[in-house]
Length: 147
Image 1 (cartoon, rainbow, N blue to C red):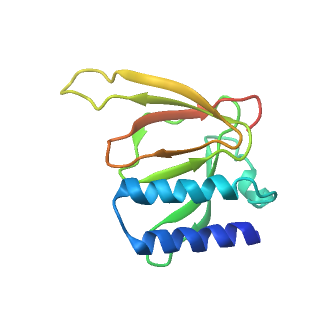
Image 2: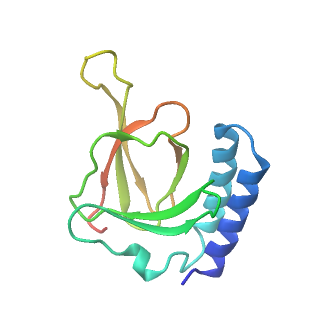
Image 3: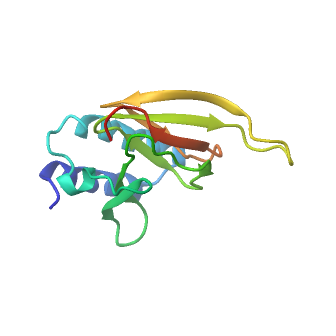
């Protein structure tokens, strides 16, 4: 079951994506809407907030029929971590509960090992842009004592 707030958010994101623009413009607008919607209680259904035991869970909330965007809930249990990766597409992250720990890496130079640029924790209510055309190479883990 999708909440009225999530339905409204999906409609707003669809309008932003249809209007077009650069990745930076689209993600900035989506992040602005997400900051507002994150204040809504019951934004995600309880099923979107559960862990799956082994590895992080990625629950689809909405996938646009034309494939132009999707909304998903990613849940990391305490101690879970992703491999280092790059999405290859734009994204906006909002933290509904707990915290996310993120490490960002410089794009590889030849066969040199990856070099960590920075790391930080984003807590409940945080919204940030990731994965635009700037080759966002990162690793994500649960940054709190709750999923």
